[in-house]
Image 1 (tube, protein in one colour):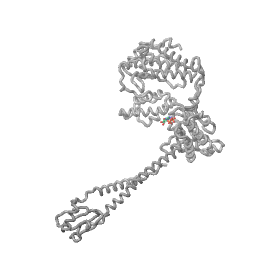
Image 2 (tube, helix red, strand yellow):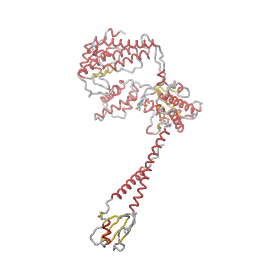
Image 3 (tube, rainbow, N blue to C red):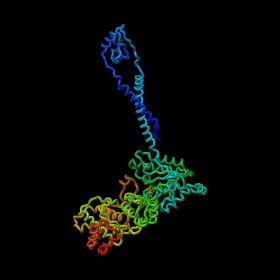
Image 4 (tube, helix red, strand yellow):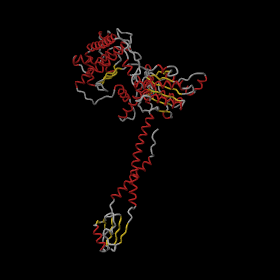
Length: 614
Ligand code: ADP
């Protein structure tokens, strides 16, 4: 609970009261007294005794003296304290009126009051603040064990299946869940058990959260959303108590949906039990299992959980009665991409020229979230150009920005670097263009983008589900094309760091081919990868599932793949030097060249026999 705050009005009153009292005190201390002339006490006594003073007012030790006669102004003097003015020399027969004024007038009374009230207020204020802080911390500590689940249930945030483009199979699977929530009786009457957990499996950004919310929206039930990583905090036991709290809240609000995003953060396979964070995760996972098992038959709470790594989940989570249903969500196909783009462009003013279909064709491998991002970027680009409507150039610019990073036109490259980049990129493009199983060149540019000096961009003409060994090998050769072109143009020892990321990429592809895909030559059809799904400590103590000699063989295979690719790239470039020169020169002149022009410039390029053999 949040500490109760005093109302704003009250705080204002206290503030002004303190200001007023302080101001008054300062005034009473420093206020200009009536300007009185000070005179000496002996002078006052002498003059009084000789009848030159008509009145003396005594207030404490202060004397206010009114001299006799009309014209003279009042004066001030001080007597010694402790004895009366008569004892100090005034004759009792002197013709002077002596008046004693009571010392404590209103100002001193207020002064006294203020000197009591202000310290009290001050201390009170300090104590109050300290108390509030302590209470806040206390509340924080108490609230630690509470789940941070957010509840969505109001109309404004409601999502329904219609808002989600594509994902048709997933929607069909989930319609059933909506039915369970809406008409549980129908199923129970037939003796059917209502499922407790549904696992949504798919890459990030494919709309898992949206689907879960749409289930809640369609069934018109509350939706509790929490991320797996929110269970795990610094202190052991917090995760488990958050789980308890979350399920308790959900049961109170049944029928409802609990959505646990990134369940793999807590649901990874349990392992050695080493390490504190690890223990915490296990306790959290155990608590989730306990809660799900503890649902009574008529608790109408369905837990939806999302992950993109169902292979690493603990088998206990997937047992019947827990997350035994699984809905697979894939990256959208071309038609779905078009539908998603349409959804995200629907609320944006766009010109007729905007070609969403060709954008959908170019965006193979993009998730719904990526496409939403492109639509948003397109609107930003149009706004930055002060246009009222988005045109197709904005869309293309947005796509390229999202896919390979923003252009960095301001980065100044010297002529030598520019030339080197042109030959490097021309090398990639030439090798990719010539190889029959490589994707066609989409665009070549020597304008720095993102973190690179230039980019050669290959795009598959259509969505692809599988990649063959030949395609991988062509991919390897074209990614080495840049370094090889540098070598041929400038000499073996003049190659640069420009190829750093190409080489990393090539090595990754080669390792993936050998370890994951069984595509080695000696190690064909064998896979050496094994991910236990365990967390850090398990991985550290995890033994390789192959021997040292196999490890050597894997390294040798990776090396031979990369060397072979370099040889092929070199054969292609050496056989087509005029084409390389032509493309590089054109790049230096125009900086960016699109696919059709690349094809024209490289029309004479041929695949040499040596490069065709592999
Ligand atoms: P996930 O949970 O799978 O990571 P989200 O559900 O959070 O993905 O999706 C992120 C964003 O991507 C959504 O807010 C939405 O804008 C967009 N999106 C993803 N898939 C779709 C889809 N099929 N239709 C419309 N928008 C989508």
